[in-house]
Image (cartoon, one colour):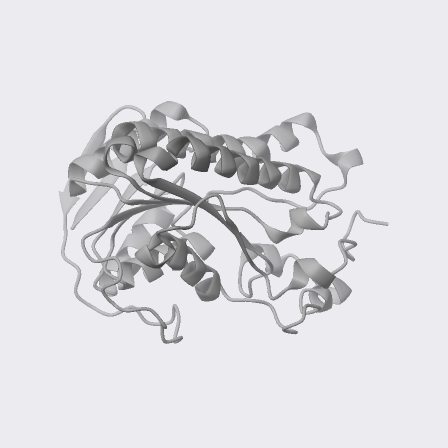
Length: 292
C-alpha cells in the first residue's frame, strides 16, 4: 500500500501493509456484494474525517483501492491508518482543492500509484452558520471556493488525466438544505446549488466518454460536526422528517456506493437525496445563535 504525501513543492511515497480490521466505524452490515468495486480505484476529497472517511471505508470495504485528500496531513495519516487496519489499500495526498495545481498533482500521483482512476467523490466542504448580515464576502467566497470550485477542479483534473479516455463515475456531495432554503446557510446552499447545476452539465458533456456524474444530497447525519453545532429545538428539528431520525454517515456513503457501482450504470445527471424525506417536510428556520 502506498501512502502519498503531495505538497506544492514535491511528491513522495512510502510503502506499508494493511492487516487488521477496523473497529468502531460502523457495525451496519452492508446490503451490497463485498467485491462490488473489486479492481477499481476511488479518490475521495475531504476523506480524512466524517462523511469522507466513512465513504472511503465503505468503498474500500467493497473492493476499491482508496485515495483520500485534504489539507491536514495529521488527519490524513490517522485516516489511512484506520483504513489500513480494515484491510483497505489506501493512499493520501495533502492538497487544497481550491488550488488547481494541488489537485492536478494529487490526481496524477494517484493514477501513477494505482495505474487507474475509476471513481471520484467530491466531498470536501466548508460550513459555518451565519446570518447574511454578518457574512463577509471573504467568508462567502471561502465556502463557495471549497465546495464548488473544489468540485470543478477535481472533476476537471480527473476527467482530463484519466476519465475522458477510460470512463468512470463521479459522485458530488451536495446537501438537502438547498432544496427548501435554510437560514444561516446562504453561502452553503449557494455553493451546493452550483454543484447540482455543474453536475448536470458534466453529465451531458462527459456522457459520450462513458463518464457518469451524479449527486448525493445528504441531510443531517448523526455524529458529524454539522450536527454537533446544533442544539436545543434545532436539534429536535433534525428528527422532524418522515423517518423521525437523523441519518448516519454509513447510509449516505452507501448511496455513494450505489451511484459509483455498476447497479447505476444507466444513471447520470441524477440527484439522490438521502435525508429521510426531511427536505419535503422540515422547516428551514433553525433555532441557532444569530437567527432571530
